[in-house]
View 1: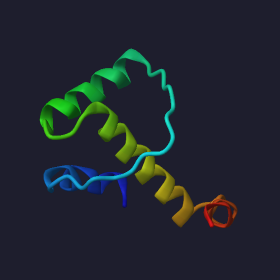
View 2: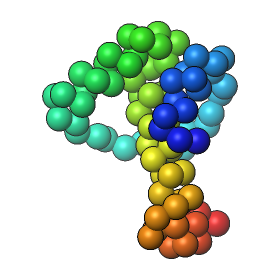
View 3: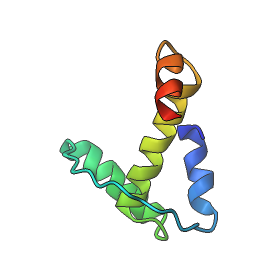
View 4: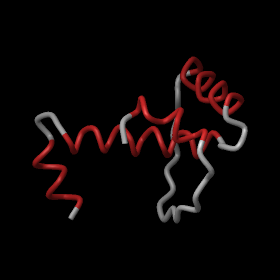
Length: 77
């Protein structure tokens, strides 16, 4: 999924996803405000879900193109 596809994804019905790892993330104030604004725009999505989707989309993008494509694709298997 591309980052630009996320707003459409957030409009769709949520699907249960198992999350097995937890990370502590520190964001600059401006980025945290943007995440909060997205959570207000999509009230069915928590800030955590929005961040999870954004990270997943960014990783998908890295795996699908760019110089890290082959290195990341082999690690994902």
